[in-house]
Image (cartoon, rainbow over all chains, first blue to last red; front, top):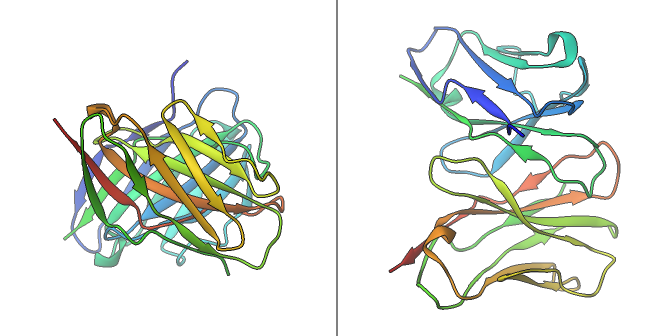
Length: 115
Length: 115
């Protein structure tokens, strides 16, 4: 069974440009999560999809970030325009069940560098 | 708000020896879950071990075990017979027992297993 995949693995862009990150969850997982780790600090929750609906987007830092999950399959996270402080590693995770004791399966992350 | 602290940014251990990674957390909740995830270099995070707060018995998964001290809000991870493949970033994570709440991660501990 394929795991969670993310594309690209690394992206370097200039301040003010736009970047789109993609996440493909494990097949059949309705729950999809985005997290990010900035400058070696803790991993922080961004948002949670259940199928194509946003269940919780309380962690989204500002309106420069837009997440979509059309059709309830893969998800994209667009940053427009990118700022220096957006640099970090963006993780995606998926799970079949969203209960608190259940495991989330993580992708390898996309390292975003904004120069 | 819940917080998770990992006081050891980096650690190293000789192959075949035992190492303990520390984690403390702060919460007013009584029902919650604690997790240790590991991220090997350039690979995805995987779940190492999970503990339900209402269970007094410490969780064990092969060479990995935890020392869960609920009153002290401490959740350390012990790795016995360390192997080169244990080299990774280790993240401690907390999740309340309430549906809809997401992970709170610590900043991570980078563990190097030396031959």
